[in-house]
Length: 214
Image 1 (cartoon, one colour):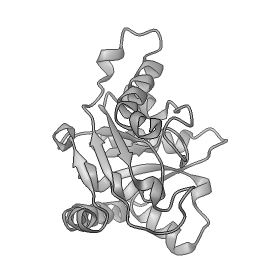
Image 2 (cartoon, rainbow, N blue to C red):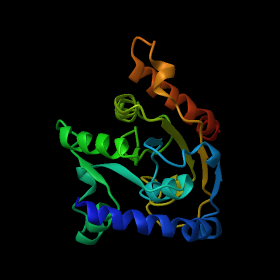
Image 3 (cartoon, helix red, strand yellow):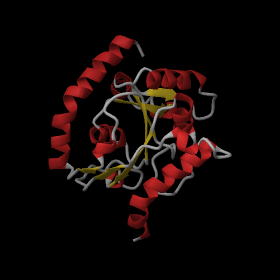
Image 4 (cartoon, rainbow, N blue to C red):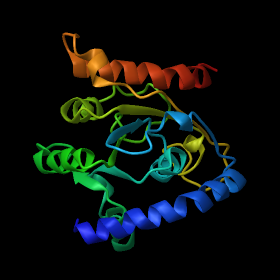
C-alpha cells in the first residue's frame, strides 16, 4: 500500500480513536484494563485472540495506537468497499498456504520504523478460546525486530459478528492489555519463539480460561 495512503489512514485513526472509544463504551459496554502497559512510541507487536470480525477495531481502540494487522487473503473478495476499507487502514495481506515473504518484510519494516503490527495467532475467528493452537508469527516478528510483544485478551466479541452469532447485537466487551513480553527474557530458551508463543497463550488464558470453563 502506498505510503501516502497509510499516513492518511494513520492520521484518521489517531483522530478517531477517542470518539470511537467513547462510542464503544456507550453502545458496546466496552471496558479496557491495562492501557498503562501499551508503549506510547516505538515498534510493537500486538497479539490478540480472535472471536469476531470486529476484533481489529476493538483492539485498536483498546490499545490506542494505529495498528497494521496481518490479514489472510481469504478475508478479501467479500466486496470492493470492504477490501478498500481494510487496505486503507493498513492491513497486510498474506497467503495462508504460501510463503509470506513479502508481507513479513513489510511487517518487519513497519515495526522497525516504530509502528505497530497486529496478529491474531489463532489464524481465524474461533468459537471459543483455546480451540486452536496459536501460530508463531507474532513471536517471530518480535524476535526478529527486538520489539515487545503485547498480549491483548478480548471477551464479548464472540456475540457480535462471530462464527456463532452472525447477527448484530449489543454485547458487553472486556479487553485486558497485559505487560509486554520482551525477547531478551526468552533468549536462553531452546526454542525462544515457541516459549514466547506459549507465554502469550498463558497470558490470554489467564483472563479467558475461566469464562469458557463456565
